[in-house]
Amino acid sequence: MSQQSFYDAVGGEETFSRIVERFYDQVRTDDILGPMYPQDDWDGARDRLRMFLAQYWGGPTDYSEQRGHPRLRLRHAHFPIGVTAAQRWLQLMSVAIAEVDETTLRAEQREAMWEHMQRVADMLINSNPDPHDLT
Ligand code: HEM
Image (cartoon, rainbow, N blue to C red; front, side):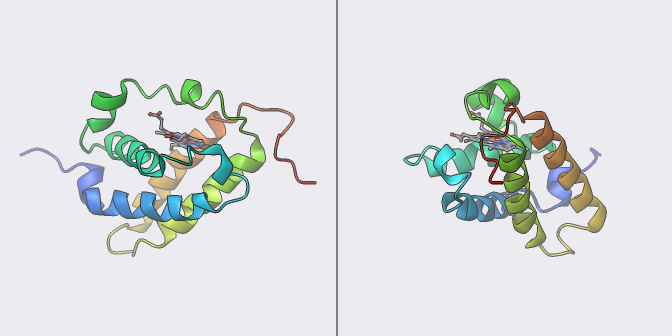
């Protein structure tokens, strides 16, 4: 018997779609993040993030099949990401994750997902001084 993946344990496709959908609902109108995304391909952006997260957590491997190796630092290199943008990304994602109920996403699973998001967001900071420093 094969062990259940984290992806399946937290509700699979439905959970990941819900998180990414809620995340992009907010990104679209966000003053810092909104303008960075392709305005004519919101569905594509949503699908790429969903496929990446699903694959990372042991779900289907559509991301690699369609996009190859993630190389996230390289793929974010042409977006100027400072601390402010990274924090905003995490803030919107934390709202999206918080909306998943506790029986679907238990505390330790929520924590694991959150730690991964924080680690990747930190890794993607590529701009100093911060292009979005509002002070
Ligand atoms: C730190 C703040 C971040 C900013 C400002 C940012 C911004 C962007 C933008 C503008 C895109 C292009 C949208 C598209 O056409 O796909 C993108 C793509 C993507 N981002 Fe981020 N992102 C951030 C953090 C993250 C994090 C934390 C993750 C993963 C946990 C992530 C995963 C991805 C993925 C998988 C793609 C699609 C890559 C591809 O296959 O082309 N991003 N991001």
